[in-house]
Length: 192
Image (cartoon, one colour):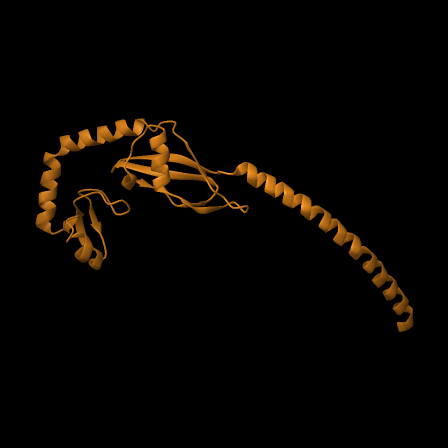
């Protein structure tokens, strides 16, 4: 089903875009809520005329979006989260945490225009801020352990505990191996 969007819908398209969607999604959600209209030939003509008349306004909107995007130059976020000893996060880091971290840096942005794949482990990720159809800003996000010192100490302690156990196991296996070798040597001449 071909429709014309009446507002920006992240993941689908921007205002005045003509997109194809499944019939049920269009008929049951987008059209009744006023977010889209059916892309009939007459609706397409009306859209083309509106875009022609609004070209100046659209250029101003794009320029405003580019000005907002300039505030993001050199911005890199580091978000601390609680982490298990295996490096797995308790919960996840998503768009809401990115918006909160941006607010701490003095950059206000609506959560609805930020997309990010949920981070479930520590590492480097990327959040995308959609200001305009043609203006998107990628913000690097580094997820770090909130309790990094505790995790490092726990990992070191676990390594120290594991090391003596491994040495003892090696010492216990060595005499058994020698006895097995001697037994095979004694059995070999008997087989001849």
